[in-house]
Length: 301
Image (tube, rainbow, N blue to C red; front, side):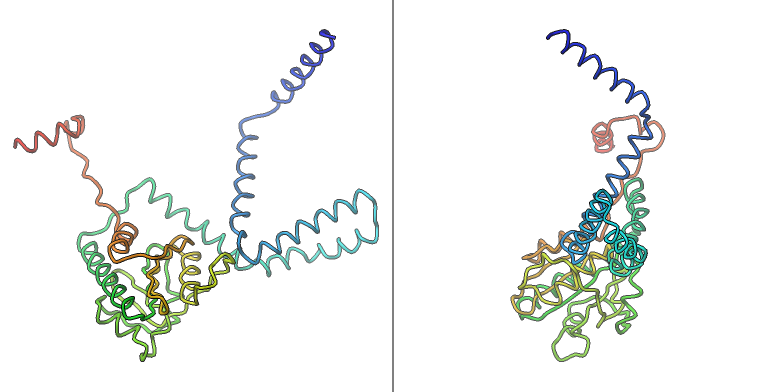
């Protein structure tokens, strides 16, 4: 009995050693890359209409495998005829998701630069953005009190020229009075979105893409769906003021943050729009001195 168990384990170990002797580091990388792609595809179609279509495609593949194993010739002929045009049909049906995936891949370069190299912003532009953000927060607070709906898009790295072309070009300063006038119910631009580029109002009355997220609460209207759709298709930060409830929300990175007050909104926008000031690296021998020691030396001087 013990001899049989020992021989079983020895055979198993020998087979595993043979198996792993043929496995190289690139095989592990290959598996990890494929797993990452599959995971990203699942995240991409989750909570969208494409999720139901993806389930249908998987079901067809399962039926095809079963028909192949059972040698069901008629069903195989039908499925082969369908799959001949399947790639074209999938490209048409999944067009929004494919576009979003390609846009996310294009944003990898910006993320790479952000991670390895601190983004720099000129002091003048930093001051302009601070003033613009304060004006946006003041205007959002006032419009929330007055139950005036608003939709303000703050452009970051993703170029929003396609969105700007759908509206009316203004190129004006960002202030409370201008934003209040734009979103006043009697003006022709109040229904659209206002795009802020480089701390200036670039355009108003713009049309934004709607989100396909099925998990959005039913109490959210077109403004919230547009804000979420804009954050899904770009890295822009979108401020929303609900006309019905006066609730201030922010959409960024396909996530909607609700029930913000002025202070929370101000801190969130500053952290998202204005990058932190990079520390100046000490020169010469000072770079080898600990930071606390340098600070005490500077105080003595």
